[in-house]
Length: 71
Image 1 (cartoon, rainbow, N blue to C red):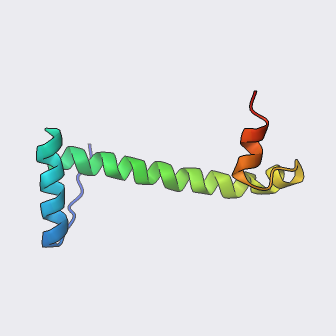
Image 2: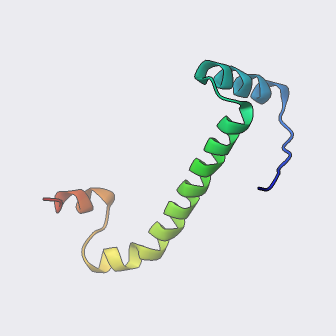
């Protein structure tokens, strides 16, 4: 398992502490979840950019076009 040290400003540290207490998790658990989510969002955006030319060629120009064809 790797270790990452991150410096937080006071406000962000207080917000993180409050969320950790409110959810009964450690600050590290909350930070790991946030990092996982951010990485997933970045991967989704990368894949979306990659597939957009194919979607456009198939007539899918906006996200709503995809949902119109869902049974």
